[in-house]
Image 1 (tube, rainbow, N blue to C red):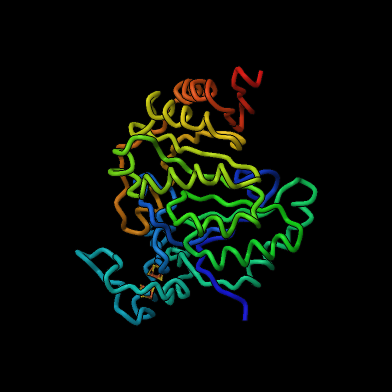
Image 2 (cartoon, helix red, strand yellow; image 1 turned 135 degrees about the horizontal axis):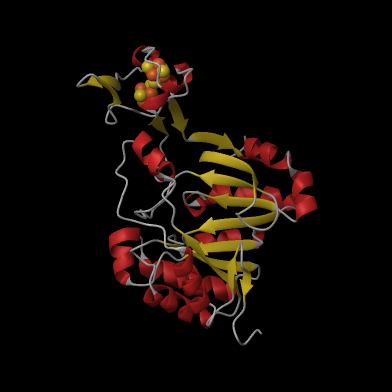
Length: 311
Ligand code: SF4
Ligand code: SF4
C-alpha cells in the first residue's frame, strides 16, 4: 500500500517556487509559529474548516450535517464552535455555496505522483519540476522521502522549502534526492525568534551551516521582510554578513511581507496581527543592495545582484 501524508494543497503551474514551471506540494503542519504566516491553514496537521460568511446563503444544511453540533447561532450569528469541530468536513460537503472549505486531507504517494506526472511535459520544456512546501515538509520525513525518490526515478528536478527547525539527520536523509533547498531565515536577532518565529533559533542556524557543508545542489536562503520586525539594516545586514562565509550558497532572496492571508485568518477564527506592514519598494531595494555587498542576491524583477567580488 502506498504511504500517506497530510497535505493542504497541491498547486500546479507554480512559477515562484524554484526554476521553471513546477508543481508545489503543500504539507500540513509546522513547528514554527511565525506571527506573519500567510498560510494559517498550514500550521496544525489536523484538518480544519474555513468559513466565509459572505458566501453563506443561510440554507442551514451544515447545522444538520455536523455530527458534533459545531455549527451554532451566537447572538443570532452563524459561527463554528471550534472546540467541537473535528475537521471531518461533512458540513463542507453539503455547502453548495462554498462558504465552507475543508483544509487538510490525507493523500497517498501514488495519488500525489499522479498529479505531479500530469505536467511532466511542462517541467521538461521549462526546466521546472516539483517543490515540497508547507507547512514544514520535513515534519513528515518518510512521506517526503518517498515522494522525492519517486520524483527522481522519473527524472524530475526536486526542491524543498524548509524553515529548518528539525533535527539535522532528518534534513540529511532527504538531501540525496534533492536538487535544490530553499531555506528560510526569518531573522537574525534572538528576540525575533523568541517573540515572532517561536522556533529553535540555534537549531535553525546550525542546520543551515551543516547544509552548506554537505549539500551539493542549489542552496538558496530566503527571508520574509516584515515591517516593523526585521525590515532593518541591522537584521538583513547581519544575515547577509553571516552568509558571506558560506561555501555553497547560490543566492539570498528577500521577500516582502504581504497581508493576503487575512481572509484565511478570519475564516479560521484565528487572530490576524494588524501591526505588520509591507516594506516600501525603496526599503526593499535598499536592503537588497545592502545584502549584495556580502552575498549574491536574487530578485524576480531585478535579477541577480552580484557582490563586488563577482563583478
Ligand atoms: S451549508 Fe453553507 S450556505 Fe448553507 S448555512 Fe451552512 S455555510 Fe451557509
Ligand atoms: S468539519 Fe465536521 S465537526 Fe467540524 S463543523 Fe464541519 S461537520 Fe462539524
